[in-house]
Length: 349
Image: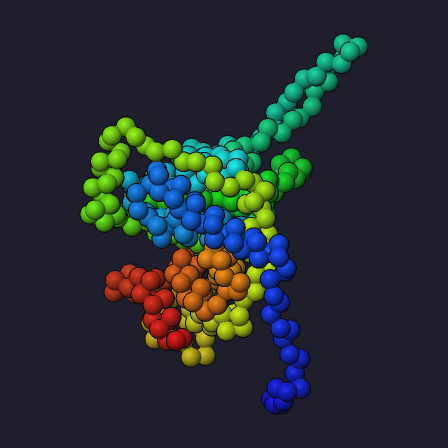
């Protein structure tokens, strides 16, 4: 193979600066919104600060998020409270085994119209389903059959719904926050890996600390559930979401994101031992794309003018864990996706 002189190769353009005073003001607004939204959700939900931060990352990155946790950890409450704090339309779908795709996307109904002359005309009219909202809560997404899951996840990817040959655009923004219970397997349907890849983040909701649990027990039994104030307008949400793609990212951060994604693949030239032993399939290019985009959103929420390697490292687990397909040997040896990702991250320091 012929060697190329690096000095003769095209050089990457310099990272652009934040686009003037408007974007600088938006950065300050993003940091302010993060504080206010965190405080607003804290009026309803005790603890879960890390979960809230990741939900806000997904919000600004226009990404979908999957919240995983045992029952009673306020997953549904977190999403509904976030919707209250935003000036966005909100829809909720409780997933059940008998749910049909049309129950989510909508359906065509036959409608009769009478003209002034008395002539009756029949036509099909599309009735939008609950997916036609800015923020959609898909509660217990693994309780519905694959056909219904696919209808939702197709809309998540394409942001349109097609029925009877007609295409209907979903609102802008359109984001899905889904919840999944990891312990109940009876009557559930696992999400295929290709569909899991549609989620920007998989956010695990852990048990509260002892002090937090005391506060939960006291607050939720007092009759005072707390009111979530409206924090931000729909126009501000769209403006902040528009800022994130324009935010610069360092070359080192992009290189690290790509290296992390490629390191999850056992087919690589020098795979990490834990990857070779326990991973069947690693993350595709969408994994590194998601890392960079989520890092930009995280930087914006901190009021930083560029995303860097610290932002990438902070998001490795929620961005990549659901993109790994572990082997049966991993299950037998008690190796989890986070264990594999920790080894990968440590090897790329």
